[in-house]
Length: 72
Picture 1 (cartoon, rainbow, N blue to C red):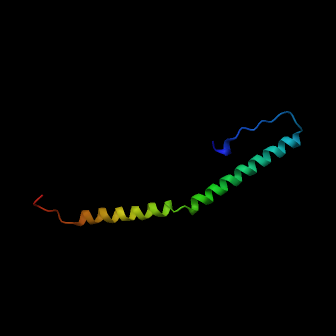
Picture 2: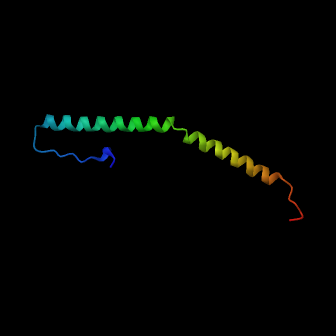
Picture 3: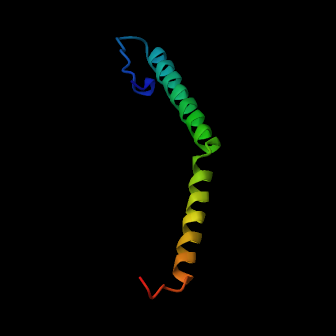
């Protein structure tokens, strides 16, 4: 299970304790989102997808410009 979605059990306490608890929880989630965004930015997947799209586009263009073989 993704630790981002852990249920927190909060029992009766002071307002400042409750506020500190949620501020800490929000900071942890914000940190997690920043780390995930950075991981995705560094990922080679986007670059690979773009390279394959270029290859496919070139291949399609080449196939369209070739004269059709009348013997087929």
